[in-house]
Length: 215
Image 1 (tube, rainbow, N blue to C red):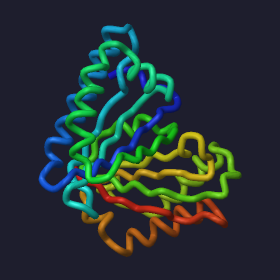
Image 2: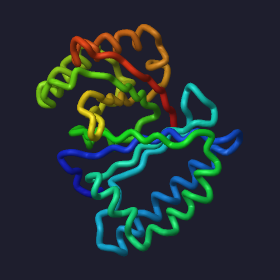
Image 3: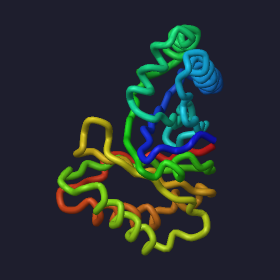
Image 4: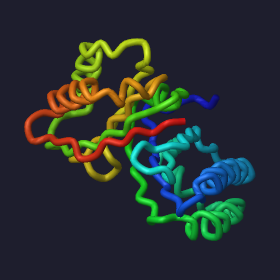
């Protein structure tokens, strides 16, 4: 595995396919990712740091969850501009776009927990938080680690990563990773997690969205 940078740019996609089309959408994204890495190799650029695919989203049977990991936004954009990326762009236009029920709305966030972010997990919960945006990252790192440790989440808990959304410090995303979906579907656990996160991000913060995704 390539050396993990101090900060990793995570792209989170939730493609929702038209009825019966999720399998092809997910397969096409895997091909696009592999093609982009080949394009990087032929242009002497570093490849993507990784791809994690979760084929199921609790709220919709035709939705999937994808995490793509980049060194920077410039890294993301430069790969898309390489000559070798043209086949991937063609696949996206011909196979992905027509098969989507809704246009993609990617989330980009910076995290310093790159090692955890790249770990395999059976399921994840993606939690979007509106924050005051006034606290420094070092302070939040310590508070979040302490708060989740105090929850005693048990052996099913793999870890978490979080960070501010790219270009919007007032929005943060926390991703918790698990070996079993039974825990994150438990209402009491969900309530404890919400209270802990709001305690960390402070007065004026609120949970905007929570999404459970499964391999």
